[in-house]
Amino acid sequence: MTLIFPLFFLVALLYSLVGFGGGSSYIALLTLFDIPYETIPKIALMCNIIVVTSGALHFYRKGFLKWQLIWPFVVSSVPFAFIGGLIPVSKQLFYLLLGTSLVIAGSQLLFNKSFNSLGVVKALNKPMAVVIGAVLGLLSGMVGIGGGIFLAPILLNLKWATPKQVAATASFFIFINSLFGILGQVTKSGNFIDLYSYAPLFVAVFIGGQIGSYLASGKKISHQAILTSTSVLVFFVGLRLLYKFLF
Image (cartoon, rainbow, N blue to C red; front, side, top):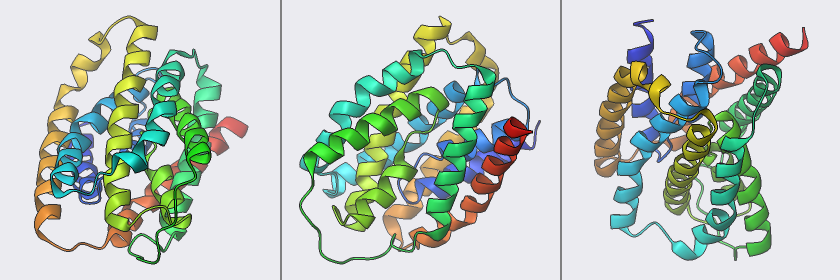
């Protein structure tokens, strides 16, 4: 069990370099260490909040957080993240949703080559953004993924933002989804008590997140290289969960 603490620190450091919280990788690790499935979303969402808070503030101060870009996603994701956290999920359904989510997330990170691309930014399709926000919010609340690793490739592939704006938007999106997702989870379970024993994990991701945010503010870092370094774990853990569910 002690091995999980440095792993959480490393995940937080890597993901904070590009404005992500690392929820998918926390979940992947928690499933490998046989943490009770009811607690996994709360742990992952809390870690997301801790890691992306400083990153979101950093991007805001630098002027990369554009409210006209993010509000259509947030206006729908907030209520749906809370609703997702409230929904009772059986162990089987949880692992099916989680496995599918991790396979998709890992595939996006592994095969998407556009994280450092520039190109021409197109006008945001607001109705489509509202729908995307709702879907990602619901998924975030149910399984504990902040949604940033899904949102970032969508923004880049549809050319709705520059890479820096994408990182800023994903960071804030993860924060707000994780916050309302965990509120739904706690409302469903009735308390935070089951999180107390995992406090060292929160300390580990706080330190890793702070270091990552500091490094990101001073150096040019390849987003693709960092994300690829964790995508293999996310992808294959997702396959493992789906195999466990099916067989």
